[in-house]
Length: 536
Ligand code: HEM
Image 1: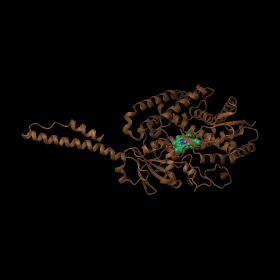
Image 2: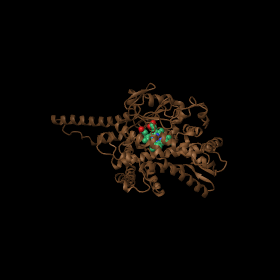
Image 3: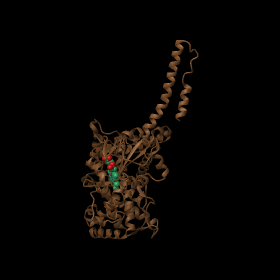
Image 4: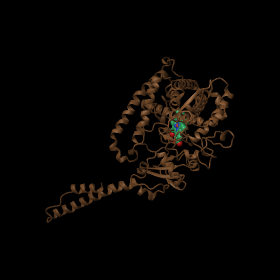
């Protein structure tokens, strides 16, 4: 490429002068050879500079990055990741024994620093919490869908993030607010049980776990967000819309090598189209709620007294004079719904799989439910009185954090960690499973053993403040604000599903395959189908 560029330049340089005897002519020829030299140098320098900057050769002289596998010039480790044929998390997992708790991957123009050790993570996210609390620059597609970083998860550490996060936590996710949506959860739990029953009836007792639990949690979040109960058809359309957004956000090669972006104009057009459809579908729900808030007489019988939208309409973020625009509201609603749907449903899938693989745990859990509530339905006020249920859910989140990586962090200014430099343009990735399964922190970490928490043999502060031993929700300033609500949903769904049904493998007596694969979250490689037997 460099050669053809040089050739082209010489073709376009001025022709040699024909009157070399005159002064003017010789001046011309000097000028012409200067031009020639100048353009040749330029033709050589520009590509060389691009090469040196993108390959990191210039930087690595100044910055002492954590070591990592050698990469190719310009593309870094991108090629190795692709050639390995492994999913990215597997590629990272396989590097851990060789490169240890902190290492660097060069992914095209991006520098990724991977942290996998509990002490280092504690140092970064808790001790140096404010330094590691921001997010990296986003690719243009993500920027479209985050309305230019106008969401809790994408906002840089600063006033916009503070305002949006405070509003979400105080007005929607505080324990008193969560209690206000109790009826919504009760309805969703009943629907979940009825859907499972009818699916089992039509399929000789076999049911899909992820699909059903996902539907239940999606309905709860939709109702909390828009303030209305939606019919099944609308819920399904909403689901389709949200899914197409998530698919569009899948990383592309030009996210790592922006120089290739001209080759992805079709994908960019498609992304804009998906965004347009998302806005067109969701804005009417926003407008309907806005009208209800302005004129409560318009509220029909499906309307709730409160919703996430109500907290947003007049929210003056970072000194603005008006509340968020409709496009920003679409973005904030999508974040609220997407943040808690697949994550929670995934936890349920792994949870039921573990109860099937460990029938003694399932029996012990059912006994506790029977002893605590007798013949009536489990109510959410019961879950606090069930230590074994709490232990099952904690063990499930230790063993199967629904995401392998926390959301990407970045530092607000260049700093150091473990003696290495962390530049402010690096992506800091936290690999979660290596903490929850660290043999230095846990006895028999590979074993699913809820009793470790009941007997007081072992414990873990899930917020990480007192030390990081498991971190399914992340830790530090960016810890998942939905932690409390998500835990209530998982506890309640597991309790109701075990109270109503005895769960076993499908096909009967088959072994459960516990390998995972990354979709939006880490789901079971073979999505779980299970047999149920009604207990009543
Ligand atoms: C089992 C369920 C859930 C899991 C495992 C989970 C996990 C996580 C993780 C790992 C992070 C990244 C933390 C970091 O950047 O260090 C996160 C962030 C976030 N989660 Fe969750 N989450 C769950 C449910 C929810 C729910 C129910 C909501 C809201 C309705 C929610 C909203 C968010 C938001 C807004 C952020 C971004 C926080 C920030 O950047 O300040 N999540 N979650």
